[in-house]
Image 1 (spheres, rainbow, N blue to C red):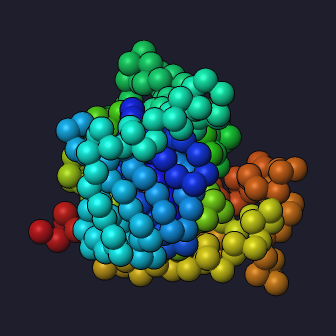
Image 2 (image 1 turned 180 degrees about the horizontal axis):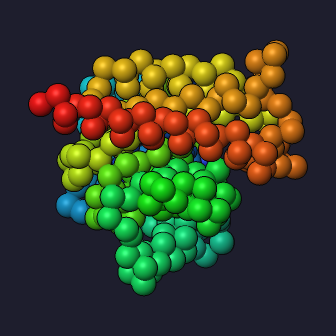
Length: 326
């Protein structure tokens, strides 16, 4: 099971004391991986014993004593299933466990404190916000959204795609949840005409499934179009970099899910850049990547430029033909 703790208060488990309100109990194998991803934005977790746990709930709730929680079920929230849940008074709780509290602070037992941490790419986001104030984004802009493939392309990206009023909005080694976390600050306020979306590879490399990553992409789309309904989105397929060869099948599955979805949706486009970097064996060629075997070198970028440019031109031509046919 997992205690997901956040804020103040205490939770007690067989592994020791952990500061924070108990947000829920979950089976580690069932959903633990999903919550571990959120550690990057301030969530902390601790694994409890398999059968017993004590949760000190936020005021005005009483502490809850739990014995043997069924695997994969949540005590707090929907589908609650436990063998035994016993509400005990605050007084009884402290009579029974106060000596452990004393030991925690006097004897110096380690605390796992679940504090809200600053977003790991906050400095990048603040710098981007400042830049967009000092140099307002151009009208009819094309924003490149996603991870370090765009970030490392740097100012050269805006030169390579200058005819589309390109704006490089890549940051960090971001995942889609990272993009969701800051899109209200760096994307939706500007209502870009087009978005080149390249993200999801880091998600898969950190344990997310293809389906989960695809679901997060759809969340991005729904949030975007709620604020900027006319923005066109071009999904740039995730590369199978040499350093991530072991994730190739999952990456291809993610790309395929997006491609199938895009074919049925308006204002969405799929750009296949995966094929531009692979050899006859279907694996990415080292010559297109930096020494880290993950990010594109200039040769790799130049493989992408004509493919992306062609896709943008074709979309523009389709829009014109559509208007002319009305």
